Length: 483
Image (cartoon, rainbow, N blue to C red; front, side, top):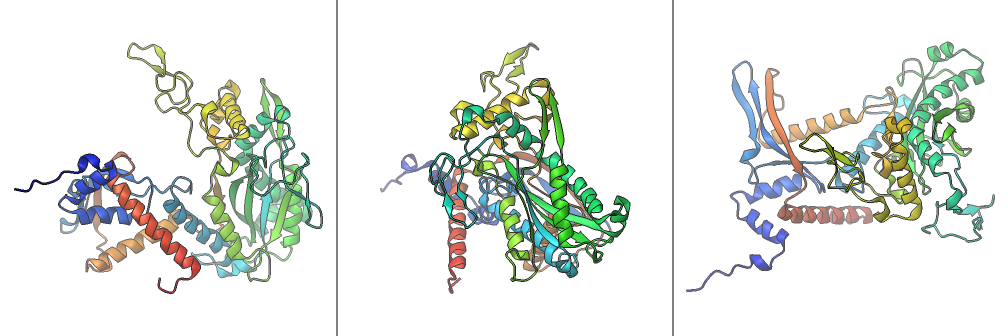
């Protein structure tokens, strides 16, 4: 009699778990759940139920329980915008951002197409200098010049953006500038309106009556670890994108107003530990016109593509890490309250408050010094409200990476609602249900968060999905006629 050969002990954990999943009653549903995540790297695990009832007839129209799944749980996408954390979900976020920005430039998504005739500008605002850094200089003719250190650096040189003299570099000022960059942008939008009114020789009330300024902005890290902002600024009439701006609202007026607002924007930070600091914009800024057609350097599609690309990046371009350093059990305090009511050192971080020791991070010296500075400043009483220890991995920047004025265009939530409605209509058509549901439906649900991530066997299935997506994307880029 031939005995069954059990090879579980020589297989990898992922392969063993995949075999166990394959032996469940409905392995097809397991693969379907993973495939529907479209390659998400860290899905959310939920346990619960939902029931949809018709109030008129008390008939249960639709019901779902996660207990009926082969694994006993429901997997949903994480929705993370950062490409370093989840490339799959960040692609969706980038696509939504692209359409949001593009709609504000070309129309569509409930935005009038006449906006393409409004004055639009692509504005770049940078941080000031906190000390000389290694860079790649060029002369007016575009010919490369040596850095101040005497070296012609390559584009991927690791020392680019790092201080020439680390001992005298103003790390405190750099971190505090990042921490207040969002407030500086808010003040810039106020001063922009004031500067435009002053340039045109009218009162601010008259400007508000005849003109509305709409914008969308995104933050990007420079190699030196400081954020700078890219913004789309558009002139509208008093009714928003549906009305044309007045004749005196021109690109030239916008260009002058941006320059005045950059120079006038100030933010004072006072502290007993570091004294008084005045936060300003850097001297370098750009105001480029946006053209509707392909006859300019910056078209609607190019600008939307730029912003969408920046929106999925994090601080990894500055050489830092993409995860928080705060110890979860003690929330960065370094101590926890014991069962006796007294404060004890946190055993998980040995009282440092750090989930990972800053001195052991796999980063270069410049990034480590900015992280350490942010961590130390965050524990000063006068900067406690900034919570810089929470944002130390972001080098102090704690603002929104992308934001827009209310009247610029559609919203990310509206785009997601449209996509959700399309998926629901597709699913109903697949099941042979009518296009529209009764208006008397009521949905009850209860869900519990279980955690994030895949089982080892599911991770193998997800890796296969990501591999297929990579091949399809590569074939699409190269123009494969068979796909």
